[in-house]
Structures are given as structure tokens and as C-alpha cells.
Length: 276
Image (cartoon, rainbow, N blue to C red; front, side, top):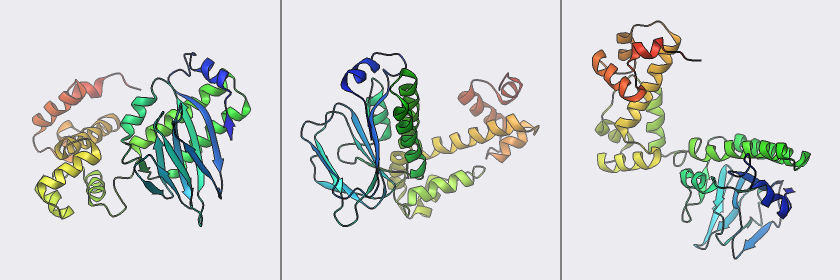
């Protein structure tokens, strides 16, 4: 466990490299039998708890929620809370307290709320390794250099809450559709057909899809197509018309208009651009 002294926290929050994000405390508790914390006034920093084994619970004032392996509990700064290890199968916990001017935005984009404070990651190992890196940096010293390194690790970890979260449960139909679209970029499938594949009504499916991805089905398909087109333009000599077909556009002129809308240049101009 590494904890910065209060005066050092205040000083670091005034420094350019750590004012936006600062790890104030971080640690690793293996098989944390009897672990329990209660803060009736909350904490001055946001708290992130990753369970990797066993289980525990979290209460943000709306009742206790079970916390399972692969889940990150997000506790905003200033929010009263309690959490602890399960009595029979105590959790193994990686945790960090984070402050800074950008913290609120990162918590917001993570999607965590008071009523739904748990985020299930697809790869909890990456998150734990980043907390481990922050611990290692802080263990070496509390110099500006060390704290900047810990901040970088924390920034990466918090972005994973947005980019590497599991969409629903392992059996969630929206996750299956997202994976299907990623594997079949060149295939244009209607909302109705995707909804039928998920065994949901089109309206309900569209609402769940937007909630899970932040985009409509068409926007998500377009994003996938443009990403693949960009890779093909950068790494092949294939004609633009061929690339258009490969990413699901039968009309190369319509593809070019879509590409320009996204990238600010048509495919030929983009390919000739100075990149890398």
C-alpha cells in the first residue's frame, strides 16, 4: 500500500503534470479476509476497486451490491460509502484513490453511476497491471517524476473503463451483435435483421444498442467501415472502388462522400496525405 502525505498531495495538485490526475493512494490486498471500509462523508478522491478473486460488496447508500472478479467498483469523490470482503470468499483487491481536475470527466465517461457503480472489464489483468505500475512508481519515491508516471498509468487504467468494458453479461445479445458487426464489416445488415438475430423487437434492440455503444446501429456500422477503409488505404494499393465494396458500399461515389464526411478528405486525397 502506498499513500501520499497530505502536504505532498496538495503540492502535486498544483504541478502541471499531476494537477489533472493524481494517484494519492494505491494498493494490492490479496485474499483480504476481514477487509472493510466505511466513510460517512466520502473521500476527497475518487476510489477505484478491482476484484480479481473471491468477492466483496459495495454500498453507496442504495443497498449492498455484490462485487465479483473482473468488476471495478467506482466511488466518486465525496460520496458516502462502505465496502468490504465477503466473509466466506474474501476478495483479492487492487485499488487506487485518484484526484485532479480531469477526474470528474473520466468518471462520467466511464458510465458508472451511483445506482450502477460496477463496471465489468473484458480484461481485468490489464487494469490490475496498471494499478501495479502506479504502486511501483509511488514506491520508488514521491518525486514529480514518479508521480507523473503513476498518473500516466492511472489515466490509461481509467480509459479502459470506457473502452474495455464488457457490454452486458457474457450472454448479452447486444454484445453478440457488436461482435458480429466487427467480424462482418463488409456486410450491411438492417436494424430489423439484427434485432431478429438478437431476438428483440427493433425498437427495444435499437435503444439497447445505443445505450451500450453510444451510437445508433447505422453510425456504428459506418464507423467500422470507415476504420477498415482507412487501414486498407494506408496499407494496400487496392483501388478505391474495391475498398468501397470490401467495406460494404456498392456505390464508390457514395463511399467517397461518406469517407470525406468522416475524414475531411476523399479516399484518394487521404491516401496521398503525409502520415506516419
